[in-house]
Length: 109
Image (cartoon, rainbow, N blue to C red; front, side, top):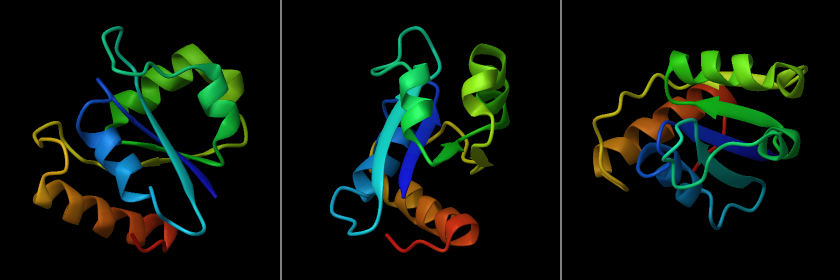
């Protein structure tokens, strides 16, 4: 399964989620951001690659639908509801990501 994690800047939340899957046997993960200054800015290519798109906040879904509506057709988009208040690989962020991923995908990381 190919997972694409999206946040605003692709520096903390989505990058942490991507790193959780570095050694996963059944999933590949990439991450990107929606904002102009993002470390990696999301493209139509990212969305085409992904089986599932996981956003950190509802506004990320809104931005993706506005910019990439056709590319999202038929894609499962999941809002993980994780606020922008964590640092990269923060233990609290890692725990929250694991909990939300189990809830939505039944995937252990």
